[in-house]
Image: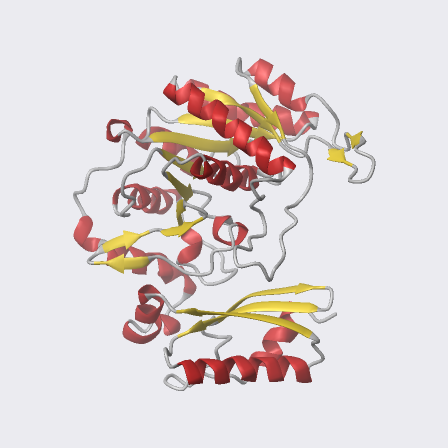
Length: 369
């Protein structure tokens, strides 16, 4: 089976006629996924001419077929105004990766002085935290946001894990935000408005910033983005109790928090630190979600507690809050060819999708009782 790097090498000869640079280098060929003998990818089209778009698609198919690919799925989409500006108008392709955040600052320069979204705006802020990475916090965040949107709520989502952003990929977002008269318009997916550092950093490049820079970018996500009217704004915090979590607590003194853990005793022990930080800064904890609580056999229905049992309940007891749900170990049964494909969002009619709908109902009751 071919690797992602091998596919990129096969497609390296394809170039942008205006700049002469490889489409791979310009990252106009994205979302390369390999599953068994099937290859799926997206092409970001700078040219609106349908004939040229079809010719480009055929060139990609021919190169992949020559390389041994049998099943090929290609998605074409138009470049956003932001992407066109970076590639055509602002010379973004020649600038180092760490400057992408500066581009974002420049687009919003005319918005300084706007009021920060705060508790007086009528928005309910929910920060999703964990003590350590790898517990599925971001998976919980995106599915909870989508579940609230399915309930008819107006939902925003900030990927505040600026070092380890993952929300765009998890939700299957292929486009970036656009800038309309100086206002950054978030990307909407599954009824959720999304803003992430991942939109402004080249694929797989690290963010090497110090604490003050992180706080400045996070503040801009609150103040300089055209969120419109929201009922809920969820924040996917980085794991632990670092600068970003502290900045959120300072910027949004009335936000509330959900702690995500696994059943493992050590994970729950570490998560207690994040909960203690919330309590020390006088932030109400809405509850605990125990992720990867068990594995359920699809054929017999037997539950295996492969990461242990009781960690979520003990954490909830320690933090004097409730255990909102126990989410099973698994992954959405989504297919790459589906128009609403995303790697991490469960469909509404699945067992886990229904579970997240129940969590959404609990949160709505807490806020709107």
